[in-house]
Amino acid sequence: MRLIAQKNSTSEHKILLSQHAPRTQKYGLHYTTSPGKTYVIEPEGGELNYDLVHKSPLKFYDQVMTQ
Image (tube, rainbow, N blue to C red; front, side):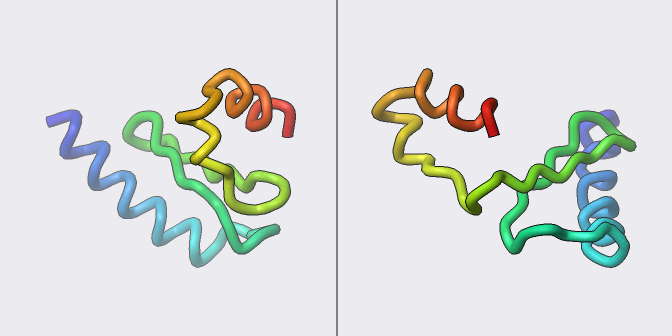
């Protein structure tokens, strides 16, 4: 039941955020941590370099967390 609630919350929040939340960049990631809680992350500099995850996970983590 909780997974269905989270799935429904995710789709509802994406619609609401796209209509009402001000965007500062063209690129953003939606994270729904629990039913009723959604966050939008807009990394500085645009899209993250996910290739770096496989080469150097710690460097990728440091890059993301220092933005």
